[in-house]
Length: 394
Image (cartoon, rainbow, N blue to C red; front, side, top):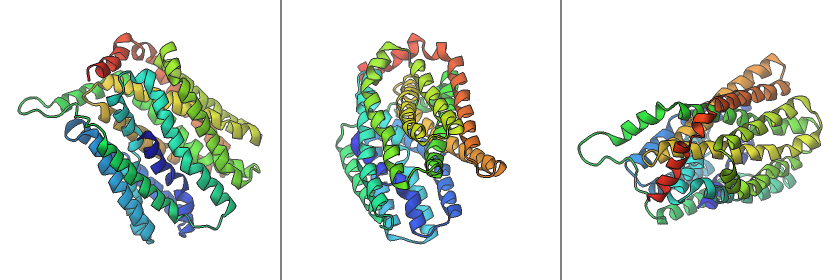
């Protein structure tokens, strides 16, 4: 399921900008589409999380969002107008992007010891992403004039596979379902979670680091190309980070047993600080290309660590909601703020990308300080034990 879900999005999202350009959209129009997509991520993930925790089994939610994603990709493939494309892409983002964190919640439901077991399972997600991404990247590099509509149909087909697969999984009963008259269990649990300072620190860290990571995704390729890296090499260079991800996830369980969770989270944010500083002050294409290995550490250590700790703090009642709140911060508000900041810096420094990378490093440094300030509280045995106890009780 993890492999199919990431393959469904990995066959579409890395190529949408080229697809939109192929259809004659200006960069201003593309920027509007991406802004609409990020705006959808400030609302829709919370609705999916609430549905999964309160009313509908999480695997059924996956079936719904994947079936809807397939239909919307088909609509994008058949339609050509800007208004239709904007509506379909925004709705597709609202359905497909939350799956990056919702699938973590689904895994936590079925893994008895998530801290030790999740890394190896998540490696299948990285593999699923690269399986369509790498061959499509190489194919488009060799045939720059070829159409990309097939990526939409491929993504639609893989989304249908994920929808069927999720439907066949054992039901994951909502942890905060309303059971007749009495207090609203979901509302009480949500109020308790949002009032937890440790969870707030995790949300802020995800907001800052994910925003800086979006700068990595969108501004690194043009900077490498500016330094003389041939465009056909950009895709394989990016794939290097995913390959390293798969390898690091094999060791994640052992590391999680050996050190406290915040050590891994701080290591992930440190890797992104170093990565952005290299792009701000180093002009050697080889070193900048190899630094995609540092990007892998951000996913494996920071993002996964924050996700696991959020699950532990949320308990069984808000497992899906806690993960979709991370989507709200990391896929919605964080990238929106980072792109706004990058635009202001670009105007101030005449499209020089190096100050943008330096600003991204400062965002990660702020996240580092926030987690460091809550380290004792986040690492306390009661928080870590909640996670295992919830798994053992199923």
